[in-house]
Length: 408
Image (cartoon, one colour):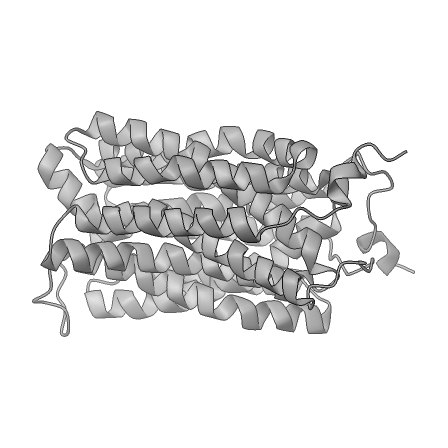
């Protein structure tokens, strides 16, 4: 019965399985590399030769390099999540994804053509897409309903810390040692996660059934709303990656200052991720989600009107609070509704998150490059308002959740 160890669930409702921390820390290094790449690539491609995009504005190309990664990531997640559920295996998907991330990060250092960079970024998006639903399922298997928000908050905190500090590290390394060195560092970070996941993280399996059926129409509609909310939030957050070259020119600043602005969002989000998860466990998911969506509306508008890099840093920091208020409760509620098919069901949420990550930059690049700088920010604000109204009208707190913490 060797498998019983990997199938183990927490014995109590108020304690987290220590394996959750091992899983989160094992993935930390790859997340550092992801943060570095998200920041470096829009700046790295400036001046690159291209057979197909040589006449397009730089904001469009910067948006495109972010978009193709997010789209391939988003489109691959539902399929790979269903496959993970069908096989009832998680770890192989994570290991293969880590290996792909590592290899492609190494190849970036030896690529000087924009068109090739696009192809590589698409493949890397698929490899990362293999890891996301599998890891979310593993986190779910290592928590109970009463600790789910806390567990997802802890996992997201470690992930966010890696992404945020990765942006700063990328800016510093690129400034002092060049982009080639930075890409090699990304590859080494991916390799570290590959080794740790391979040798120190155990497989998990579905071991519990749920009385909640996500096939009910009301539950399916709530999944749609949660997906829309995540998409809108990520579009409003990732839109600035298309504007990094423009911000650099307008503010007369360099990679380090911009990396701080990018990372301010993630660092603050990290600080609030677990507290927001705990609040959603105690007071319900819906209130916290609505608060985060509402807070992000004026922030997004402000991002289109900033005049200094310090203003950009402040707004991005506040945006971290808004995202923490949405991401952790949304994921926790989605898992509550998913039953045993966690990978396939929750992949609709993570795929929407990746799609927002993809389409935010390209939308910003097209509208700013061909119409006006401010327009994409106003459009994002309207999208967030729409998502807020959907959450208020369509999301229902599961009846069991409000009583769970008081159950004897």
